[in-house]
Length: 377
Image (cartoon, rainbow, N blue to C red; front, side, top):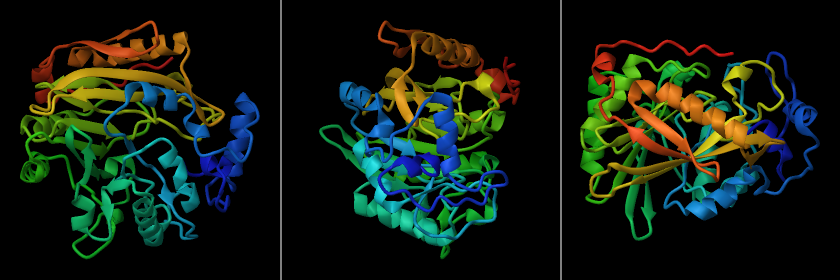
């Protein structure tokens, strides 16, 4: 979420004026962060916000770097009639390049905060920056089309992006045959999963990896609805979809491996401007994770999964301390119990998936028995 407060510390801050119920300037979010953790020197260079994440990228050398970009990139003064608006100045798109981002999934509830003008400028800005985008377009075919990234020496990665109204996406944002918008799913039915799977199979070549990035559900709470589980299972059971990249929650949720395929139900925010804002502290929204899956190109099955924990301080990613990394491990293991997944914390504060029962509790989930929200203290 590189808009709003984070946009204000970068070299080309946009107009800070907001139309939120309680905050009228994006600079207020900078002030809250500074009150919590100290002065942020401005302007920060484009690499500043990534902090220790850059060293983690250097160590891991991922073939492809994918993010859910939850902001418009525009100077448009249009505002969709909703309470919260995220916007980043087009010149600040260089911050994405500073982290080597290859692909931005755009189907989410902030992409069109600045209306159709903001959507068009976002697409144009990413294209000029050489960053692939998916999940939004000037019409439905463009919004549904995958981003295709060539991974040097490792084949292609196809990224499909979609969203549901449960994440706060206005129904009017759905792209139409001749209308701009996001790739909005009407529901999470078996038929909807089959349509995506059929498209993936038709476009996927041997050696390709297919990722479906989904913005779904609320911001807080560990409960994973039965329809999300069923939908993710249907996608991965087809043989076409290799990774389900779920997001919307501001904190990490349980991880599942289903028939060898990785399902991330809620990745949490990697970066946001919520620092210093009270409420929901028990979920530790200040902590974030870099997800580093290794996927077998021939089968799409997960070979290895490492998670690198961070904490956002002064609008910058810093490696999480041991206590915070332990908290993340324990939380993921608690929430992964229903899926049979377990992580171990290594000496360098990396979380490694060490156990998973591929069909753990699957019969319960298929019968539609939801998990209640975990108690937060």
